[in-house]
Image (cartoon, rainbow, N blue to C red; front, side, top):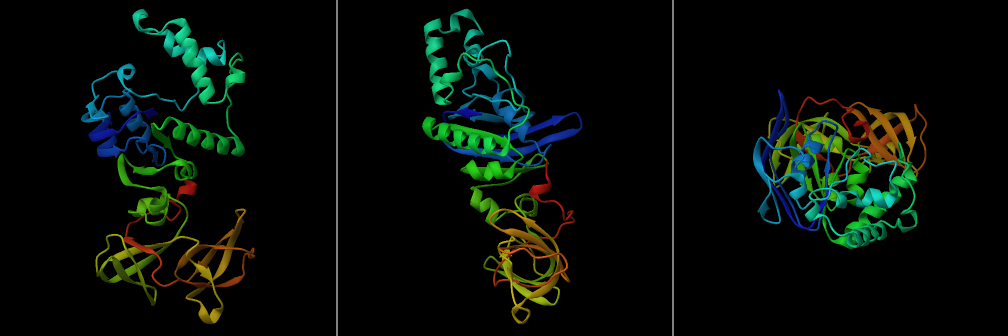
Length: 339
């Protein structure tokens, strides 16, 4: 969805029967930004998009565009253009006719003259580089292969830069969200967990849910011994580490997260812990291995493959990791497992 200015969402909530789809939610989307809502299926991101577009009415709260409240306006009176998740093409119309269909509906006095409509359709075809296909009939694809998806990401970025307009993009694909967005809002169970730029979302997730949902990580149960100056001293097994403090309390339990690229292989005499390789997966630029250790399973990146059953020394770098308040959360809850 796109608009020309800032979007402000304040105190918005939505319930469908007994299901709370959106909790009280506040969000400011800067003008001209590419903003993505990211989260697992059912987290409320599509409901929020529909409320902004006017296709759903919030139970509470307001939506404003460019400083003007539009909560009560119908969709056709809002300064937004929305692309739906499902295909909405007329197979009996050409590409140009599909693009121009919206200009032929509504009250007759509001429809542009035929010449203006053709000019506006031609402008849109030029924008998306489909001039040569204007007279053809659409053939929707049931799925897009990887290369086409990459190409479409580049097209979205190009169009955003050319129009300098505000984009609100909804996805459960974290690769899409992190690669093309200037800001990302991570949603979970109808609420916003974190809003930040993609690098901050990945490197400094604010909550345990965000840490588990975005990317991959190793999570260790720890006892918090001391906190101060944004750091937490934690005991993991019999070893003490210093980690970034994400809201833990001295004397309590924590879960410490490290990204795979933070952990390193090391000779036995320099290793922080040792383990046995469980799996080894190839990701092009690196291999990701899962290692079973006395402290629990962990993941790390290596340049050369390791065979299952190999013994491995692992070094935990100084001041690496983030400590989160302990929660009972399935260890498989990471972004690669979410649909």
